[in-house]
Image (tube, rainbow, N blue to C red; front, side, top):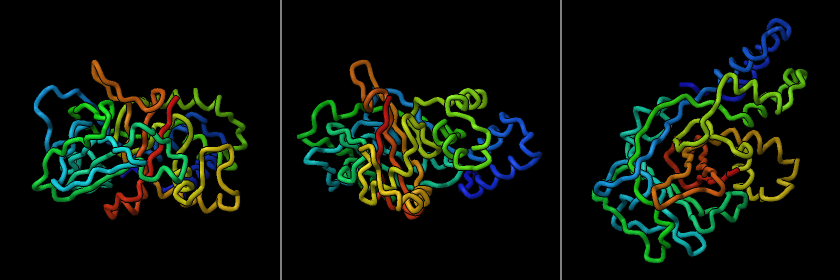
Length: 302
């Protein structure tokens, strides 16, 4: 509904700049480009559950509602923590672009002791997403006996809201910087931020499905593509320049599936790094085919 591919966006950028020989007001220009980059996101609000355990509804934490014979996932001999389950039939009306399956349940897991950042190819398996279309004969599954108490996330009720999502400073600035016409304006990132803030001030602190990520450190799509190809992104040097064009092109296939923010109760807090987020990424084709085996997780914090 909202989404344009990057080729269309670049064409629009060029067209807008050429009209009137750069006489267009910069604020108007930025506003129009931001408008062309709108996506739909499903924001998730949480409330600690003090009632009966939630079974087949969406929730954060608690015990997952899964097949009786479900094999709990492990990473480096440590059980992954259950983070969330999403009843897709109930969120379908909020999914304006119809990117998610319309029925079934999605489950998100992540290993909280190692708390991998997703920079290294060896981190594969630190996060998992499971999808079940038919949830009949499911039941609440107990946590593994070797799971530490703080890795058992308390149960939260959730509510959903459809919202317009716009790119964060970093993603938007980098997109504009690729254009020769924007380079001529000689606008630094420092000068760009106040201009962006006048038009759109993002709220970074929420959990959501889909949309643009709330970037804390740097754009992640290229990192996802490089890491799954076997390149370690944890150092100063990333990958050989000869692969840059290919990886940057393929990085456009990645979209945000799920972003999770801090959740807390009066006596429990689940925070990722220093007030950070975790981001579950998926390739568009995999999402279309309901294939969640190849997701990639990245953690960013302040």
